[in-house]
Image (cartoon, rainbow, N blue to C red; front, side):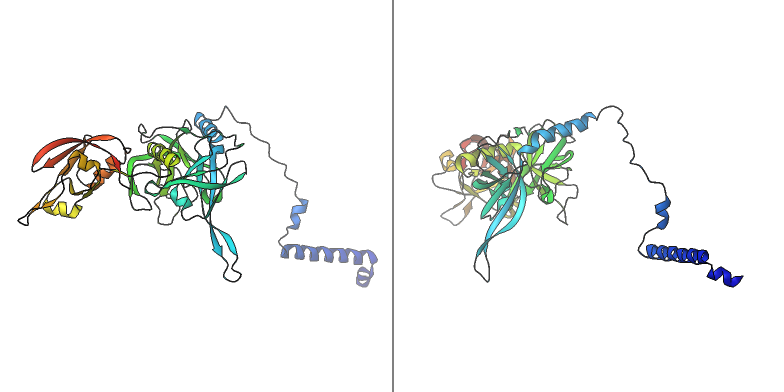
Length: 376
């Protein structure tokens, strides 16, 4: 009977089928395929849950500002020419990237100076994918600002609206648009974390009245716009504080009032004259050692507005003694304790403006009116 079982064709066929199933099961398991999944019911696509109500007002504002402003934001590629070591052929090498934005209908693009620094060629890409070769109109390294220009024909893009940085408030909502890491037209939001910050430019000169924000700013955002909730420009994103070089919650923007003044000069003249009086000043450590507060005038340059106003410099008397010159203690009603105070106040003025200053001369307080000149 036992022999009949193993010789029965039906039983042999069944055994073969079972063996094949076991082998298939083992092979499928080896390749990570679960045979039981073939016998499970298929899952249907989940139905969409309809929203209850409308999107929040804040969300709608974000979307409207982005839709309105993003076409004006540009992606900037800084290229340098490099000669191949073996063939001596000249090649274009991308040196860096950043953001910018359309300033006016004439094709002027505003960005950071450090974005276009040492560029041999600059390429500007718009949101619609069009690319343009850009020329440098002017640059102001002291404020980390530069103006480029592209062919304005057939742009059909509205420039950003201009706001004011004089009435900004801590806690006010802001939006940053840029191209971080080369990702086109990225929107981040946040608030103004602080005002009147001071940062250093590439020239080591201080930029004053800077806007601090917690809106995420990463490499590639530099030169892009910082906007208020009306879509108006209130600053140009320029720097972050981060040991790793990526966003850590603290970003800075050059205030729009400074941007508006500097960009206008760059477009008109190609450069920005640094405002001053035509004087050199006594180093701060010497003033501190003498126990004198204010800015001491070391030298008055010939033909300067300081000379016209009658300011006095340090003099060596016939007996070998040193006679202290005038000491500036106040400009435009603001106290001047050190040289950085004077620079900050003068940075708000244009060449040709007249300012009221208060000096100490031989221990006597005296008021003067003096014109601002370019000291470049």
